[in-house]
Image (cartoon, rainbow, N blue to C red):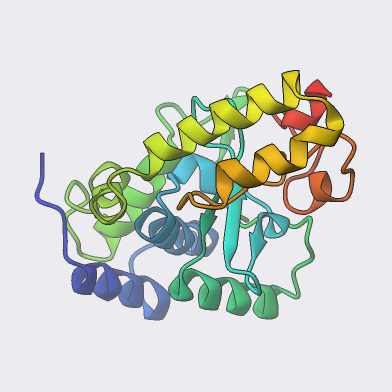
Length: 222
């Protein structure tokens, strides 16, 4: 595997993409790459996950982002870095974006009612890195995620453990017992408590971050 770049090298790539000019003819794809690179390095969110995120998934004030990881059963909430929070604030200001607006405004070309052959969101980021003059393999999403993983070696496992316990509480505990049990699960954990990990009758909390109609949202199982 290619050696992962330093944070300074990642910042240089982001600067090159933001200030240009690069040879890219798709500004919306360039902007997607800028967001995707920040999110994978800062919060461990892959390109395909970034592509479906909406503004409402982020809370810059309380500093968290909530999303559904690939191959996961439950939404997770992770701390929002200063870098991502600043980027998000600028993105909202520049677009006059609303909570339901997507982070990604890039739409791949459609051929024969499907995306271009071989298209992947990670591939789109690699292509932008290449056009900016950087090694696309060294700045691939797979390699970049190791920067986040090295800084958070146990977080994914802890998220899975706490989610398993929280789902057990929601399924088997009486409503009047649930809140106290949820607090015991999360109060001493580095894992942030996601919006779904509240008692079933606590309707307001279920709507704080992720939209209830999204596929895979735990509120659909209520």
